[in-house]
Image 1 (cartoon, rainbow, N blue to C red):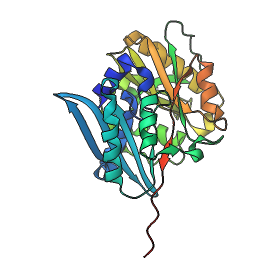
Image 2 (image 1 turned 120 degrees about the vertical axis):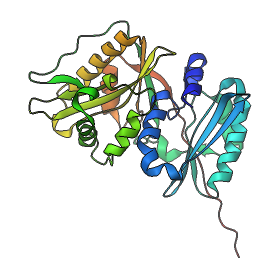
Image 3 (image 1 turned 90 degrees about the horizontal axis):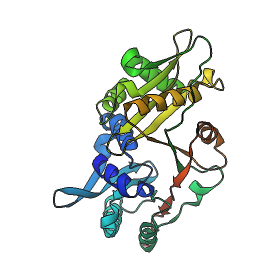
Length: 294
């Protein structure tokens, strides 16, 4: 699946769905397979020995969601993906998030009864925007006095997990989840960055996923401890990370954020370090059919 993401990135990066990038696949699969993987179902489509499409079905409390990717040279397979999803999910509300730039795909989803998810598309909605920048010119990162950059190989698994949980208050992230992430390709501990506060607290963290085939690096996830926000830590960490990624051979970087007007914080941070909008997703939903009267 990551190999397909690399091949699509090479020819049509605007068609890589938000949940189908190299880094997003690694993050979701690594952290979820230990505790939730038994409920996940994947379907793969091949052309000979080469993977050209996949669907990843995940049941939810109030319905189902689908991650998927289809290589543009085999675009017609999207109909098979949709049919498989409908059969697998059953008669529940179904959601999916194709790329807004995938005109053919959007037409096919519409033909199968999927419509814009108005709840996700509102001013406080949860649609995703991908941002990008080249790594040719990078500012020197500056941390407040007493803070310093670290990486996951230096601080160890327990500190890494604590940093994530401190940044995401509702997170259920565990050591087992992290070990799954760490085992995922192409995780690198030296590209999993943290900022250490003077008292030893890990005040911010970010994983960078390096796609060597396309010389690009993706931030996912990135967060700051609630007690250390608005001090420029995330900005400095991103600049430091991009410089480290450039030294490893990356020439391009991406980062996703919520794109709706009601979620400006991450977007403004990314714009502040040189990222600009690239592509966005187009959330779709298909309602469950009402039961026939007895």
